[in-house]
Image 1: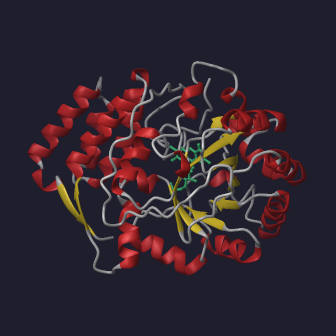
Image 2: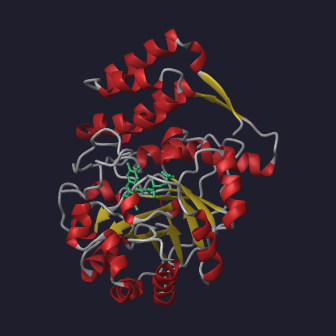
Length: 372
Ligand SMILES: Cc1cc2nc3c(=O)[nH]c(=O)nc-3n(C[C@H](O)[C@H](O)[C@H](O)COP(=O)(O)O)c2cc1C
């Protein structure tokens, strides 16, 4: 079985379940190189790669952070690093039919950070050895997942309750792993800053290259406002870069969070599923206040479906497409209605017809000028 995620959360979207993907190898689509595109992330295989300044990262999201979404986003440009959805360290080495799901790091492995969750330190070491020759930017340890079944098993956020063991896990993983090694955290059970700092310092001393903080407590899920002030404090207090993550949906959010917290970079999750061009827009606007992107939102919808068909196993086309449109449909005037129709579609051809009908009825939704 694949790693479960808390699909019961209000933002979990339609059930993508705990099923598994088997991806097919295929040549990457050509990167169109939108104006915001940058190619600054450089990695020499075997060397510890440097993080670009003010890095932009795609968040790990179960059933969303797969190759098809990565390719769509890279086509718009602006993205530095793309995290994969979390994979179970044990499953990654079990030669299960699911393995390939987590091991497809295309189309640009040097921009990919593979995220693992683990219960046992040895399993993580095995998983890292298994992916060592993939030329990826790095590996990330999930210390933030607060799904009850993961915590009960001792994975994800459960590690934040045992700081010494978590630091030992990271130190052990560091041995023999030459690419970047990072960890993604929430605040923990409470927003006790000193506990967060102690935990994070333990990881930095154990050899973490950077951390990502989604500043909500375990039980908050997506409720309440994220504590970006704590991202800022942690970024100031730690010797390694801290990425901030949470609720960045527009350029203005990126700008405000960057000013407020000065993190080493910003990771975007749901906002990237809704607007896969957000990274290109941020890069473009940061360089030029008058920058705007002309987006063909209808063509982007079909492009995503094409990528799902080209890159993902047929068994998973429908769940992955539905999960994406749960967010993407929010771009449109009649989002609720469109979501409902797509959610009830029996297959991808039906989804295409629903989309075509929608854009025929609401042609104004086809194109947009994206400035924020
Ligand atoms: C559908 C979904 C799946 C997620 N899966 C993961 C995961 O596999 N690993 C992880 O560390 N966080 C996961 N998250 C949390 C996101 O990485 C991110 O921390 C959170 O969505 C807040 O960022 P955002 O406001 O930009 O979406 C998931 C979130 C969503 C919505």
